[in-house]
Length: 290
Image (cartoon, rainbow, N blue to C red):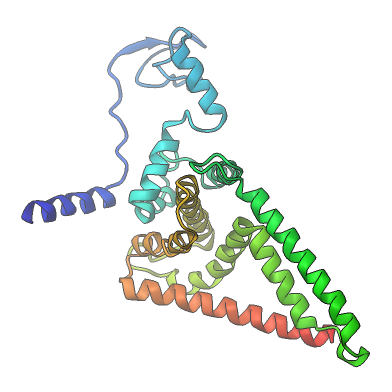
């Protein structure tokens, strides 16, 4: 038992330790691009790595992966740290350690594209979930239209008043179901407006800027997409997806240094405020449309 506790403490220490840059090479090199004589890992004139040599299959593979951002070592380091130490990694990035990690917005597009690939059938079950969802949506719309026609025949004209609230709610749920990632990203940005009010002064970052919190929220969503990709690829039950959306607690807690209960309270209050605003907007829309 003591061995497990010791290993856990070592892991916690590693989590909080910033990325360590490799020692500068003592070897002398001649850059193959610009001819600069230098000592170190990279050419100071053009930036080419000292490790680049003659063309090989390995170089070709790295160049191919680099097109998708995968050949960059920072990509794999970012994926690893977003899983194992997300909040501490975000803290390091916004504090200026940006060359060590993959940019958050670029990673967002890559993870979003990979998520669509997995959803389109590149998973263990081979099911194209995008086509399945579209077929379900079309079938549901057909049933709804058929039911509406039956109601038109049965109901009196006075009962056919336009229900603005139903219309607004249907549009809201339509966006939520058909564009889940976009919907989640909008939600994340919305609650970040109110999260900032609670975390702009925290033990770890006493002067957090709103722009830095936006970067933290994008990285947090990148983390959620990583879990979604893994869950979708393994074809795990749908309920597991909802569990993945509880993970923002971890990066926010690590980033701010708040206690777990306070971190949970911050997210709960921010969600509550956004829900109240949405409900108020729907009520206003209801009275306007009616």
